[in-house]
Image 1 (cartoon, rainbow, N blue to C red):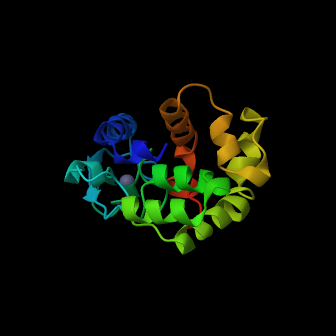
Image 2: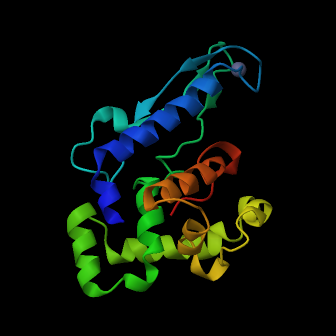
Image 3: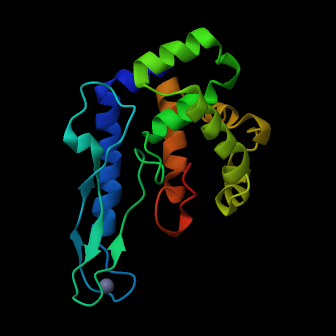
Length: 189
Ligand SMILES: [Zn+2]
């Protein structure tokens, strides 16, 4: 499954979804004052993608109210960026899901492939088991994934979606969009 992280086409796909979400948000109005929204995207220093990634893959779509004196920033949800985490969300999901298989050899391979340390992986797992599990988002939506066990997240959540490994990962990333920005955002790890 970690091969997905090395595939630029996967990141193209996620970029396409993010663009759709952002364009829909841009077509709306500022939630604070009702003025139009202008683009104010920026490039993130996201870690953990494939080697062929280009700056556009790291562009965080964002919007800014056009009205002087308001200028409220609106950052739409994303399938690529999970809140403020420095690694791509897909990495946080996939690597956290490999709980049982985290033997030293596999860990060394992951470190070589995506540069993630064991300490970071342990912190991510802790995030799933505390911050995520206790979030209003999970309490409100866990009914959509009745087979997902809270003690085995995110692996059990990933398994609860249908399709190939790639399809399940994308469905899970779409499911998580509400916690990637704005008021729904979950505390950084
Ligand atoms: Zn405004």
